[in-house]
Length: 347
Ligand SMILES: *Cc1c(COP(=O)(O)O)cnc(C)c1O
Image (tube, rainbow, N blue to C red; front, side):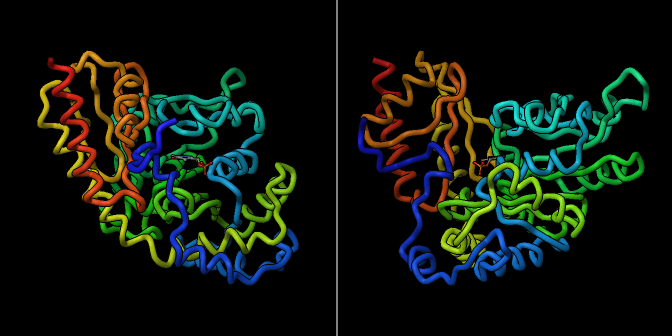
């Protein structure tokens, strides 16, 4: 195992800053599952304010936020509509079917984003034969879509339709704030189009653990029951909530730096005819190294020899993610490393 000093594998790789560790060390705590942890309560209150929702619940992970939302909204046999790239479809071990009896109907969108027409084409009419279309999932930003940002108008048109058809709107907002700073649209403005949504503290916000799910009082009351059943009710969780709160208070605006670094990185890569780079909007860069006659795995192994890494995603596709622990200087450094890899592949 090589020592990795430039870690572009994911924005989950951040370590708490010393200021965040200070906030964690001095956090007031209590019994979370009894509602007695003051730091958790402060965090959920702040989440409600930011998202303009009545209630919120603190959970160990974004995955649990999705799974609890499905459990609240669905009865077995119901169907969720989402893009085929969705995290809850690909990376949650079949949770929606295992835990909520859900089937999933996928849309083949563009960079993870689909249109009202796409939705209308696959929503099922009520029938004794069909699964019941029940919810629509939107992932803001789209992870496998390359950090693409859902335009507000698209969300609004789908949400208006969902309301008229009695469909639930749920947002996987793992990277909602990345969208907010790029589009200069508040989290609340996006959130008003959703019945439920969640944000992750362990991605761009740089906290070690945690996510929060928000919605109406009634929704969150039901969510509490499944939090217990799924084993997500905690005790002195203020220890981790303090990191999350610190991230919310201090690390939203700085996401712009990650976006600048991502653009610089993509621009550097696009100089090579052997590498093709997908459009970059936020902090995720997808590129293809097939032109170097390397697999994604081989490319990443070469990077690792120099103390850097990305994530191989398929045969020759690579994903890089910028975050709190990657500086502008390190982006220049990794571009220098890639320059050597490209030169060597040509000799
Ligand atoms: C990371 C991620 C999740 C899951 O969040 P965890 O906190 O890792 O469980 C869900 N959706 C998207 C889009 C993600 O990027």
